[in-house]
Length: 436
Ligand SMILES: Nc1ncnc2c1ncn2[C@@H]1O[C@H](COP(=O)(O)OP(=O)(O)O)[C@@H](O)[C@H]1O
Ligand SMILES: [Mg+2]
Image 1 (tube, rainbow, N blue to C red):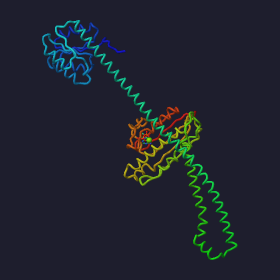
Image 2 (image 1 turned 180 degrees about the vertical axis):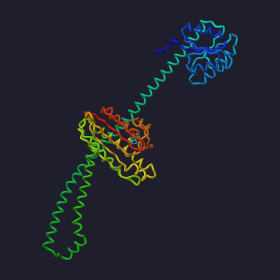
Image 3 (image 1 turned 90 degrees about the vertical axis):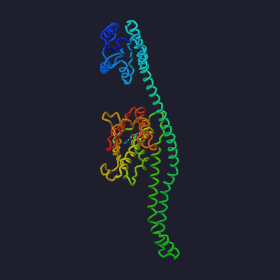
Image 4 (image 1 turned 30 degrees about the vertical axis):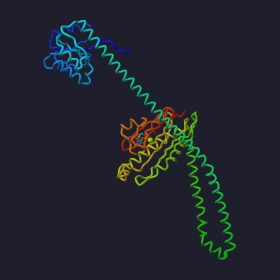
């Protein structure tokens, strides 16, 4: 409802003629208004500082500061700009009336006063003023409401796009990991056979050498040319390191499958340590050092925590977003400063500490991911979960990582995502997820 009631409105009457002040004050007070008076423009402006009136009745001719001057003052200040001003002029003075209106007065009343007319005009202008005020606040309210809805929509849209991208990527990766599996298992299996074939042949060579210690020259030449002894001693090493390589590919493909597991409609029981490990393996290439910084050390302090009921693929995305940020923060702190050696002496080696534990009440699992990177200013900390907030250059940061992480943790898992950070000291993200 629009409030247009003018009851209890506060009116300031400014006039240097005391009888005028008295007559008007009395009429206004009788009509239920609150009234204050001033005897010149300067005094009026002082009074206004204590309390803003809803309307001002202003005489034109006054000592010290006349009505026009006062009106100009009122109209140039934002706080008083909107207060309706009604001039009180002599009945014959047309020029003053024109000037008054041109200065922004809403109306004028003529002396001598007709009480009923004065009251009617005042009441009309108060109502108009109230209406405008109400409309203004409504417009402001509606506009901010609309802005909020618009922002929500944009956020949601971006997150949908991002999640869609992740899910397509996830399917692709899962498919690839699956395809890699067969050939890799085949190589892995056959390497075992290759080794045992080689061992048999090696044994056979021993036998030959035992029974025919002096072979013909051609064979002797061949043996020394191919460096038989070296080949025989090196081949097992070779097969062994191939096996290791293949084992790494298998681990990687398993991690890819765990990381990109497509989420079912319903939550499932999941070992978060498996999720974290697979995420680390995927980020492994980013941990390696460069000329600017040493290798990033990942320290894991895993506690005894049960499986949790969750959407594993989404949780992995959260781990990924937080760990990738930690690596960015370490890159920045160890390369932003030219004297990175000195820097790393202060901070130590670049490190990410990952801890998991049960909450005290044993209803939640806590996952803490802490880096000793660049850290954040308080102003930045306030905004990091906002959509599109990033301090990284265009092309590097999207500002989506943490807002998606928070959505996944808070909305999808009814958990909490918190941050502790200090500039130059590093940051810690704490994920809390209910076990069931
Ligand atoms: N571990 C961290 N250390 C320092 N600042 C961080 C860390 N994690 C996040 N931030 C800050 O939060 C901002 C938002 O992160 P995020 O939502 O992942 O977007 P993006 O990484 O694309 O910038 C980053 O730009 C950075 O300023
Ligand atoms: Mg990020």
